[in-house]
Amino acid sequence: MCSTAALHAEDGTLRVGIITDMSGQYADGNGKGSVIAAQMAAEEIGGSVDGRKIEIISGDHQNKPDVATGIVRDWIDNKKIDVVAEGVNSAVALAVQNLTRERKKIFLISGAGSSDITGKQCSPTSVQWTYDTYAASNGTAKAIVKRGGDSWFFLTADYAFGQALERDASRAVTASGGKVVGSVRHPFSTADFSSFLLQAQSSGAKVLGLANAGADFSTAVNQAGEFNIQSSMQIVALQVTLTDVHAMGLANAHDLMFTDSFYWDRTPETRAFSQEFYKRHGAMPTAYQAGVNSSLRHYFKAVAATKSTDTEKVMAWMRANPVNDFFAQNGKVREDGRMVHDMYLMRIKKPTESKQPWDLYETVATIAGDDAFRPMAEGGCPYLTH
Image (tube, rainbow, N blue to C red):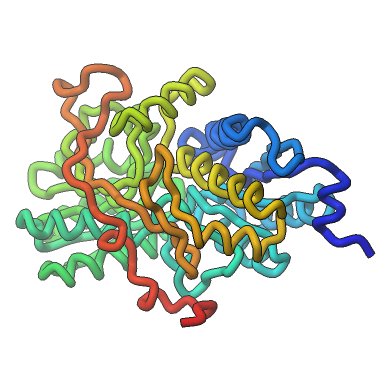
């Protein structure tokens, strides 16, 4: 019987599958832009690696774990896929991770944030590249409590990502000497936040922590503005997507603090990548899209160096070698699948501070990767050998 590697070598193609949200509330921040980011990564290495032409295919998971696993299973069984990337939506990513672990395929996760992905549900064949709920909430919560925001009420999306974000933020708040006075959970894709916002306002908390993302985040911020929540509470965003802020404008979002892994205008290298991406997509890249590109760059380097697509060999190279590109400097892939890199405390600019349409953020502070991400020993990953 031919080995998988032999079949791939005969086929002459290295196939990358981008599993993403093409049609739902995460489509702008991920979606087609993530496919373009993957194509750029392929072009950056010359369009082929180890003598194999790189082919990018994509699928729309519709934010449904069963749809996602159906697509990825078909890719593995029938399309000779070598690596799966992106996986926005934590429930989707956890389901796909279970499948890729079972089938011994590499999964490079960029859009999904639940810290359980590298914790109790970790996989030896996955890397969570861009951020997670621990890092996204850790720096922000500590900074806000230090500035006097010591009582919190959470408005939380009621699925894996939101629940993990609230849990990790609550831990950071209490560890910093603050307290959580309450929370309320809302369904995915909520149109009317009025009752939830009034609950938050009546709690007496100083801080309203938004543990949601995408359209839910945008709608909550805009409706908080309509209810003048900012007059009695500081609104803190625990996960922000650049395209959402651009679409909603700065009128209600200004001065929100949050933590992110990437901003297009931070360095000459981020600007160079982002301007090329903008030419192709008509929007600046989100952190998730940048993470797709960076993770695939590292993967392609691993395939070239090992002259193999064998999962164990490629994963070993990716762990052994630092990540140095426009996205991360001296990033490291840990044994639990966490790619550790610096994170950045950000503030959304006031309308008067913004000089151009995508001039949206100010970098307030850099948070070293080892301070931002959960220590490996605390995650509960069952695959660790030491």
